[in-house]
Length: 602
Image (cartoon, rainbow, N blue to C red; front, side):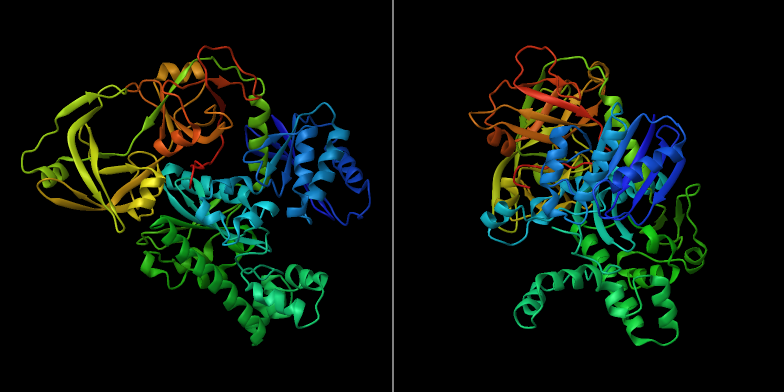
């Protein structure tokens, strides 16, 4: 599929024609200095189409900066989607109107070609509430849509995927800090493939120092400028968006190369600009390592991240306490391109890998658009999927069992569970947290190689712990918990998780549904009156040992007011329901590149 990717700004149009299967750019171009008048974008797109000289266009992918609360994935564009993007314009007044102008012009120029919107904010939809919420009156925040959205999501998602492939590790097993460092700059904590923290917030002003934007700033500074120093709202807007950051600090401009050149000549303002920029990025690296309970790799990308050797050195110094060590020669020699996307600049002894990755947001948009368009004709076979509630429980290894129940202890089966070979045990343990305890938590068998305790968000608050959302078995860097048994106690340094909602499938089921192990789907559950909920990012787990069943925790089941025998039903990607029986839930199947469940209460 050949996808025309359009990135429409207020004064420019960047375009690229990409073969999504081969990942090759077939043509590219840019139209600069667009007039701020009606029809300018239409003329620019006509110019791009002339440059293509009749080349086939199977789909159009549009970069859209802000998707607000609604858009968590790429969307096939129709009139309703256009209206929804327009409704988000107040959240990104410099970007969404220009994106919309490009969409309207492209739909008019290519009326028979499917068009897809890919949102900068979508990747960060998975932020837990503690990361996306500002400490404001919730009523005020809800009324005005004030929350942390995050940006540069397409770039963060792309380089995370490339880094995982380079490291030869599944993305869902890695903890990454990705640094998109260009004229716009942002950091992202990606835990097991999903954004859990990011530096940009309600707008792209928050976070790192940028070319012309200050990043983190005491809101009192804005109030003082408005109240005490006679600045107008427009004055402050210009200051924060156009005259701050590297440009404002250095007095030279927003090009780091020029700032570094002036600093080398002894200019103190330029030196300070460089120091503040590096300090802010380094601070975020350390903070995000703490958020994730560790970090496996730091990834640098975009203009500064890919090319600024000295700035990379400044940012990554004094991080030895994380186990991160830069190799000076590798850093100096690092070159990335479309042909060689990744360079390893870490010392061979460094526990935390350090990678420079060539970002390609256009390729990411093309691949996402191709998946959406291809999915329109996908055929899925129907079938009811039982939904089961997974209560809090404990998995133990033999050593832990003997510590808690005495030497030579064995598990005593109480009743079989729905999954073949699994059973609930007579034995229970008590969970002891920093705040409170939960007694009588059931152990499940058989024994495992690692201990794991699965709880709900309500349990987490009760115990006074902060447990990450994880796939079962992925306990590295998770939360600690103390277990109390009749013969002893055991403190696990890691192992406490909130379980990722998932669907167990036998390979035959997966084939029938048209999904694969690791795919993610959405489930709309019809609960009690007015309690319809969409459970996003339900991961598919496939094994010959599994029986078809979806697992959610008690919090989610209570929120949805599920009946005892609730079942699920697969839909086509366009939402057309396929016939089935006893269906009280609908599955919307797709394969987003990166997602994390937005758990109730998360």
